[in-house]
Length: 122
Length: 205
Length: 280
Image (cartoon, rainbow over all chains, first blue to last red):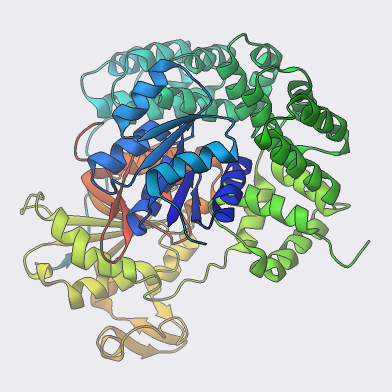
């Protein structure tokens, strides 16, 4: 199982990577939506974990293009620092399957991830 | 048919930068996006350019024109431009917000004078954006601002954003504040992870 | 001072910073390569330590030191057929797409910037003649620009070492090169087919003159610009391109770090960037 983490903060990418790798997932990273689109065009991922606020291309725009250009329909979790209702709706409209609010606890992340892509056999 | 030497590299139109400012400001609201883009570039040397660019930025629907306007505002970088960019931080338009952050990263001196107020903004999102701006701000106070954030800010995500950056710019001076932060958010694994990483990097230098 | 100038932690910190700025990733396996070059710059800048140097690198307003280091860390040798998967992509994918909406009475325009000493535009000329059957139906204009007028003169002369043409297929070599004193010269027909012009990609007046370009090769140039100049240059190239036109960047470069104006497009041979057909 391969997961793409899309976040401009390097510490966040490293944290997510640690949690996912400990559970046996293979992880790749992108620093913004544009770089993520390039990676999605070149590789196949089973899951995307996407931050909203990023330079050059934000998370909504990334998911919208990922879905509308039919690059990938694999599940995606949108990650935000805000809990506003508005963000939820926008995230789902853009093509997210789940929505998490930072900071994320490992247990919560793994529950969501397994819900979407199932258990990874280590 | 074959390879052919070009003879059309000369300008096709007389659309030169020699136009006067009133003409340029008319082009800035033209129907044609290409005219608006060139006007957004050429207006840089005109008086009150920032005000006109910010007005158009608000009305502008075409992404390519928005991008050029933001580049020009960054190049001008006067008080008016910076204040306009700060207003963009509060918009619901996510991409404009992020572009404004990128633009402000290029304006250290101008942004420095309002940084303290941005870092104390009642809206935690604005405070997070302010920390994002600090990332590329070439300014001697960056570390102290970040220390103040992780010591005093009550919002966990504002602190989280600041810690990420402290790992890169912090010195021994940041260590006590990082340790104190861990104490403040004992039940947040992310904060523990990020603060430990920052400390490790600071000690490792 | 210990033998190791840069600690592991510092290397990670540096690698992340450099990645964010340039998109180039150095993992631990590249340490020897990176450390050696960084040490060179630490010495050249009279920095007391790596840490001191890193502060200069990070906070210098002009970004000059970052550019110097980038120069050192990116090996930039130009030669014929370099990164030729993009020329493959030109023939197999970009040109077939461009001609679907191109006026048949007007030439297709390809722009190489930087021209450098001419290896790239001449490689493209040869590719077009040898590999593209559309060359019988379409006129193609090849424009090669550089900021450096001296290198443009070198390009116009078109004389190269064996090393520089080592990747050219032997049949092409026989067809397009002649022995001259000092090396192998590109034949006149090909030299005449390329228009060499001086263009500074940061100068509005220079770029304003470039219009109706269908495909731009801008490889390993923007990496030497600072963030804002890079973004502005991408905006100028947007102006130069016809809607639907393409840009190819160097293999370590990504438009994702530069500007959101373009669509990323995957073709079998390469990933390229396209100016959208209509406004977004």
